[in-house]
Length: 373
Ligand SMILES: NC(=O)c1ccc[n+]([C@@H]2O[C@H](COP(=O)([O-])OP(=O)(O)OC[C@H]3O[C@@H](n4cnc5c(N)ncnc54)[C@H](OP(=O)(O)O)[C@@H]3O)[C@@H](O)[C@H]2O)c1
Image 1 (cartoon, rainbow, N blue to C red):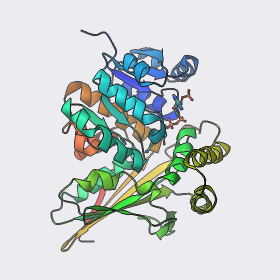
Image 2: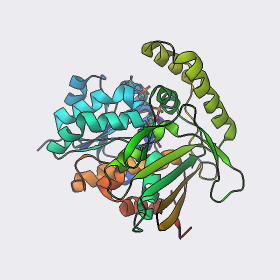
Image 3: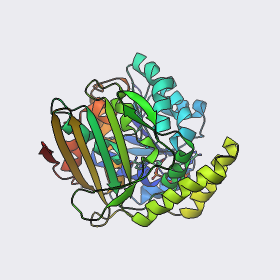
């Protein structure tokens, strides 16, 4: 029997990787905290309160399929925190497949979710392995709300809103800019339809009087997750952060991208966007404070003769993400996923189970469900 620790957190030196490690410790799961720089990973681990009670090792690894597969060999689950995933994800997915590990990440990039499904979904399924990009507050918490709505027979249309209050990390900011290069899709009568450029809306936010400015936010993962769900024909998702000035900046950047950056060759586009992102976010954001960092996931579900609305209020977007990743790993060490191959968090673990996990750690409150709205 291999003495390899069963879970690898790749990108453990990052803001979210650290939180995954914190929750793995609380769940008593042995893990390897891996990254490209041992000193940086160790320095982050050393800051985790109670880390001396965790069963863990630190490993350095180069970002190549061969080196990653070597590290993953003998482990069972890889929690990948190195984003943007459309840029860095392929090597990690390939290495998981080679080493026979389940793959999870935290992506909010619709293009990566589509790519992962098409390129590796059937290969992971053939090995009984889970390929689950996007186990994270954006968009698993909204997926839980959508599935609660879908418990009502007769709904076939999902209108989803996700908002959070906080400071994006370095990789999150890089990701927000990287998604400008992608095509964004929603689902209409079960077909992908591209969002028009620079689409944005003022929306009602349940529980407050002031509207919020939101965008399709790269399309979100929902249209991809619900594409093969026979209950759902139409799915549109919108989101962003609560801070209006940040969203106004995002809308202005979208416009600038269309006019000034899109005419450039793709590699120059990527470099220009990465430079803008780096100039906006250089340091690590502060640790979340539940009195400040709140999240809201709202889903209106409708059908010809059925209507239901579900709202989930939560706190600490990044902590929700860390816990969801750690729980996924914990669960996969004990039993196979409900669905192998490409699957969302709710398809792999069940929405009621994930809701219970988030509630039990004090990160979301009971969903507010209103029927016949
Ligand atoms: N959907 C959601 O709700 C949600 C929530 C949280 C995070 N995320 C996503 O998760 C990703 C990570 O976020 P984060 O908050 O942890 O960001 P972060 O604090 O910037 O950490 C990024 C991690 O990736 C590593 N990394 C970056 N470039 C690398 C490369 N070329 N090779 C190897 N490692 C590299 C970094 O290592 P170094 O320390 O060595 O630089 C660090 O460990 C982002 O894409 C973010 O959008 C999504």
